[in-house]
Length: 257
Ligand SMILES: C[S@@+](CC[C@H](N)C(=O)[O-])C[C@H]1O[C@@H](n2cnc3c(N)ncnc32)[C@H](O)[C@@H]1O
Image (cartoon, rainbow, N blue to C red):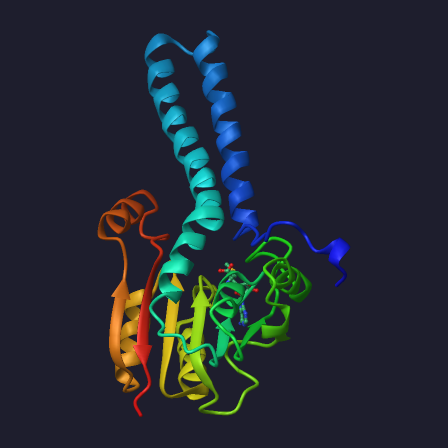
């Protein structure tokens, strides 16, 4: 990548772009029908109030969810990532794996903590999970942040990591493991994370759901120092408005020596 085509700011994309699009389109349709009902005489006074109220609530909810998902991808996740990476006592020489790195948000931030170490990201680059997802996008963000020489990306499935056991000092992952729908698949990914982690190594798993499932499985597999990182007030509000489908927080654990 030449100096001329290095972008001036990193772009970590938008998660679940199809869902975000759905919320905005459905919200706009609900808003349009709401306005038609409100300003026309199609319905009598009482039906107008009932239908108008329901449509108003639907439009507010759908548009709110769309905005909220954008905020999650563009602001909340970035802030959380920086805080979570501060949990590691970096020496600078670590070998780090980012599982489901996407456009490289955690990967690049981790690389900034390294001197002689390396941050490796793996992904299958699903477009439905992140807009314009690719290894090139991750490398472009690494170039923008000046960490190209400390970053590597590979195409791989998190259920079958192409690394030997006891290889990484730190394994990180952000909003990726929940994309595996089956619990057995999520456990396969966690098994792989544990396998490639060095004894005394640390995993930090940030996600939008299933954090308790991850913690229980880590415990079952003999991991220690299992900790949760969440903002209790934010958690309660988000779980309530998203019916439990979106409450970002993280779990960390260490592999026994
Ligand atoms: C919501 S994105 C998050 C990306 C990135 N970690 C971030 O926080 O910006 C989820 C990522 O998981 C990846 N992914 C989904 N299933 C995967 C699998 N089985 N193996 C590897 N990556 C996967 C997707 O391609 C996508 O890049």
